[in-house]
Amino acid sequence: MTNDVLNYVKEKISELTSAYSCCAEAKAAANAYLAAIGTENEAAEAKNFIAELEEDITSIDALIALTGSETGEKIFGAEKAAMMNAHAKEIKARGAIYCDCPACTAAAAILAKKDEILG
Image (cartoon, rainbow, N blue to C red; front, side):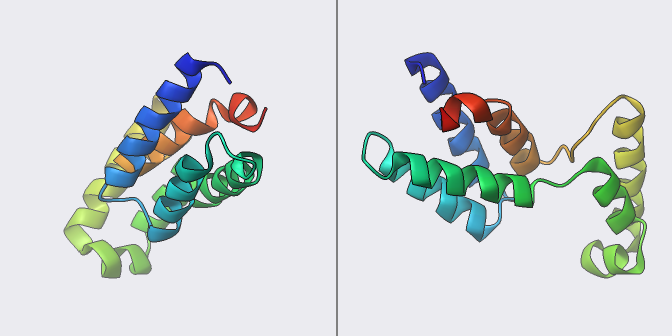
């Protein structure tokens, strides 16, 4: 991985881990990967980190389904769930593949560099 890509990934990891919407598992995987950069554990931690992001990133269809459900109403409240559902449908119509919360946005940017990260 070039220094430019590494710096970009580190910047996106910072955005990911500081996002209100980032889960504890993604934060832990990101921090483990950062700690392993330049060590013999880097490849294994990169693989774990990418796997965690792929598991956690929310597709736009999953977001629409959640925010349009009773579960979504219980989690977010009826009004916020409806607003989020409308927003998700709008961004899907514009071509969005993933949720556009800060964590998913950073995860998508990192996953776009997956091949370079995994070598």
